[in-house]
Amino acid sequence: MPDIHTRPHPDATVAAALDRLPRERLPELLRRIPKAELHIHIEGSLEPELIFSLAARNGVALPYDSVEALRAAYAFSDLQSFLDIYYAGASVLLHEADFHDMAWAYLQRAAADGVRRAEIFFDPQTHTERGVPIGTVIAGLSAALTKARAELGVDADLILCFLRHLSEEAAFETLDAALPYRDHFIGIGLDSSERGHPPSKFERVFARGRALGLHVVAHAGEEGPPAYIIEALDLLQTERIDHGVRCVDDPALVARLAAERMPLTVCPLSNVKLCVYPTMAEHKLPALLDAGLCATINSDDPAYFGGYMNQNWLDTFAALPQLGAREAWQLAANSFEAAFADADRKAAWRAEVDRVVLEVAG
Ligand SMILES: [Zn+2]
Image 1: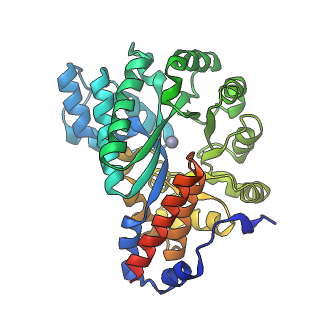
Image 2: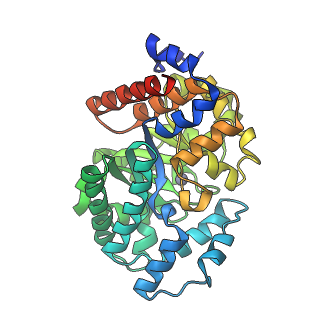
């Protein structure tokens, strides 16, 4: 049996408030409740309008005539069909200011959605392969993060992701190139095309990252099988699994994830847009929470998948009547539990979650 006793529980006053909160106030709670976003690719926050304005600023030709034509291309059939457009969109990012402007736009949206903590993925190889120096990427993103701490009250850090369709050797080169900027990122991750690129391919570079004191996470079990999740845990020794929803195909794995309180950074709108589930009503998030997993809600690539944090929360709860105020509290608490932040900050955010619940419940 999974050890559900390690899951955070609301105290009695907060539990009573959650139980009396009427369903019609649930959207207000979802909007206002403080949350951590742990699965956001900053290149996936590039809105078509910003892609076009950066293309004009940088003199980059786009294979789309208009913002509308680009947005119309966002009808994906699977992960690869999305990635093809994602890399085309990223081609407009050339200068430090471009990376800053992209991250700043995301952070403003995150702040408006009640995000207090953001752990932001970036894909250096998407840029270095086009001749953009990694220092340019990191400097632009870092400047926006510094400004967000001061001006928006959003505490944010960067996680460097390796593109798994490229080689482990290329990942090693990327990590080496990033080391002069070691203070500007807190971890490493693994993203891009999952099928055919198992975590085992990157075992040695992840060992190197751990030896450097970096946090380690990896996408696994989005389109790939539960075996990829097990590889990420056992071979990469990840501290979180990004997506991980296909764990439900393996009950023993679900029990293990629950017992270890291994966080899953679930991305509901992404899962529906990329056809992991046909509709939101069929999403397995309620089952993951019931099993005692440390599941969280995140936006993945919000510009491409139909919404930022609050849209994910609102659409998920609207489609799944099993999810109510108790689950909103649980998901918010899980997000701070899973964050790579110190205990004092986590406790302050958790206290703020409880304050908002009491306010909304009245
Ligand atoms: Zn992702």
